[in-house]
Image 1 (spheres, rainbow, N blue to C red):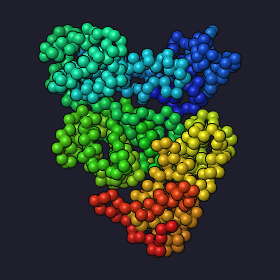
Image 2 (tube, one colour; image 1 turned 60 degrees about the horizontal axis):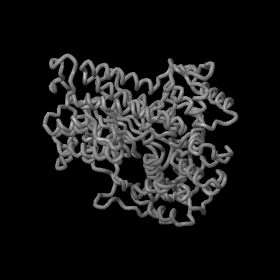
Image 3 (cartoon, rainbow, N blue to C red; image 1 turned 30 degrees about the vertical axis):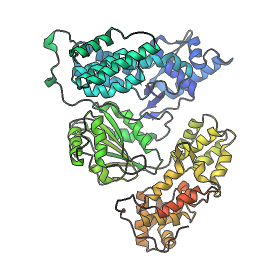
Image 4 (cartoon, rainbow, N blue to C red; image 1 turned 90 degrees about the vertical axis):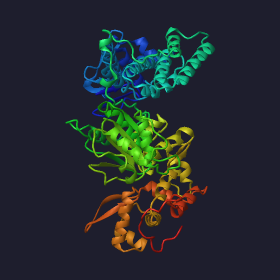
Length: 633
């Protein structure tokens, strides 16, 4: 059992999230974790759950929350009734808050003994327990009372890690890590002093002086005080040219850390996106991914790249990020995340991606360096490191092949619509829709009680095909329009005369357009075939029915359908006998391709599915011949 409060509040059993209920049970769990052996008195529980205005049924509600937590946590965690409150005994569980404190304390002991490299590793592991801001999902009362203290603990460890890194000559790494922290916490003079020291040792004295004057102005303007002794001393040493990066070590100069004794391999910072607070479902997939991502038992190499593939919006990225956080401690040299497409959706050159990864690993990248030089430097660096690299939304195998080294301990986790089957020792996980119970849990978790009838909600998620992004879109519609019911929204979504695209577009989330653009990227033959098959209004299609519809020979039709399966535009529903298969068209995609849409948006994008052309100045992708007799509808 894992209890986590340094990020979204959650409990995991064998990598599977346990249902804790709503905001207040989660808050109670987090408060008991923080209280530890001291326990929480009843008035403290009331305060963190309801502030100064607890309800009349407060005792009954607390009892209900405790019962719910006991059921969710099982035997690994014990909730003990005290004379005037409760205590959580977590001897059978791993708690990120306690792990963070233990690792940080060990790091301080090792730092005091002069073991800078080991101390830096321990501080890095401690900071790796954090998955975003602490106490996500708690009440405002617990967050207001505890979040600042927890953030103070994190920043203290960040300063201690920076001091250890400076002692090891890792000034560039310190600059990269502390620059955003100083911007976020401008009053922390310790952070500012360390950043000035790191900049000085990178030969950036002018920037270090600017950092000092910015801090002095901020302190004077907002607090009306001058910089303290530490910051002033750093500034004076900087001006005198005597600023050193190594703190004094116990035992005299003989114990000093010599640069040549330190490994040249610097630890990379964690660059993973924030974990999704309402991540739901995919329990079996998450367990399998974490098993695949484990380093080889002999520690000499990784088993091979892992690919998560599926239809656009199926949750590939959020699943990969959740798995990466779960396995992060196994990769002490860093976890890096890079997007393989630009903001317009076009593939990025491998050289640009390699440059991002090199910068994430602390390397300076010469803008004039050629593609081969960047890729070679990246592969040389990764073969000497144990990193986890997430390549998100990779476009094709050529883009990935250039980045993945043939050996080493770095593990690659790749998301994208292709299956990347030619990568050596690749393991592929194809995502479909969520299971019905998981889809209902996702809808209910986002709407937090807005959904009433389970029958209407079930119809709504069926119309969404269990597609995670579509469920998020309709859930956002229900929250934004309180006068809508699930039944009303389901009726609108099922009506072919409605603007289906509009119902799946909320703010920056535009599910329909994303799905149709995925179809538009297909080669011309499969693109036209998909349009005509959708007009059949049949979810399941045999090869012979498809051949008659497309007016093609059976063998050529089967090849075309298999290509659509590879692109996740079709699924395989079963066997049709005589070696054939029954293919299944996702209902959501069929709806988008055939609905007229009263605003014309769906018609326009469906036309783009037929008329789409490859990117300018790039050769068209090889595809099957155009479908005989096809026409734009």
